[in-house]
Amino acid sequence: MKVKVIRANVMLVLITVSLVSACVGQGDREVRSTEIEPNSVGELVTNLAPNSHLIYQDKNHNYWFGNDIGTYKYDGETLLRFTQKDGLVSNRVLGMQEDKLGNIYFDTPEGVSKFDGQQFETLEVMVDHPEKNEWKSGPDDLWFRMGWDRKGPYRFDGVKLYYVEFPKSKIEDELYAKYPHISYNPYSIFSMYKDSNGNTWFGTADLGIYQFDGKQIRWMHEEHLGTSPEGGAFGIRSIIEDQDGYFWICNTNYKFKILPDSEDADEQLKSLNYEREKGVVDEHDETLYFMSMVLDDKGILWMVNGDGMWTNNGQELVQFFIKDGKKEISPTSVYKDDQGDLWFGTESDGVYRYDGVVFEEVVFQKK
Image 1 (spheres, rainbow, N blue to C red):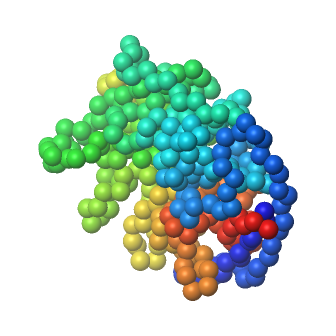
Image 2: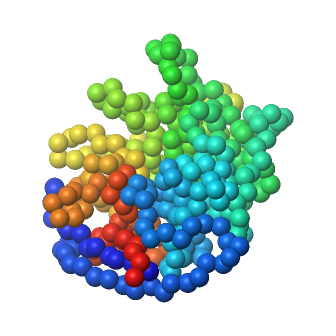
């Protein structure tokens, strides 16, 4: 099996930047083929599905790719696909995490699967338990969302999953008064993010953001973060902390500095204390909403939304596309690996990697 690397052109839309000066060419690199252990699960395959928009690298430097037909593992030599027939609880993978022991966890709408390198196990869920509304956490806890029809996340303590409900949002009644027949759960978790201080952020469909520091939960909401000026609902789909400690949420109109708690009589749900500062807008003053954001090793924010991608250095936005021939590739997710390389997932055009010089589409093929 070999990995064929297609180097794609990059077309700048707003301004020219040096990172795309050498983006044309082709090359191949060989990898060794190894036999799969007889008792291992997974199917040896030659290519990723084109909609492999989830990307994750584990501590052993294996790459994992997820979509709605299962998950893939690439160890540098072989590409394996895992599905329900291998023990995965659902083929629709929403997220991937790893614990301190190296077990990999797959978040799906049907439950959470744990993979120890040999087999899958579905985690036991504790739904009706006395700690349902008690927010607490240990240093090694993992959080999962398990779909979009619940009012809170699931906390895994290393043994079981505990369902925890969000405290009632301060705008829930207002939302239901405006939309009495809403057909989805407005508390649905659209994004999760852990910041540099270990706080976990949960972005919801319509009811703002919940932040949990391991002891207390806080809440914030600004309508423009999840609702476009034209009235379209986007939800809180992306949260990122930059190198200066500012948070960027869904769009770049503003950035936020988190402050110590202020006095708040509502102890059940404190309001997050923050300062809002002017961010960066594009040359047309258009509000752009992003599905995924990451901070690269140079402190530059990379942001994607399925309509091109942008870099944000805190002063200006640069929009560009990956071009494969005449086709413009627009990623829907971005991920940084432990080498600092950026990986871009798409809905139908495969996965691209950017090493700081060129963008590459990795295609797995037999010899």
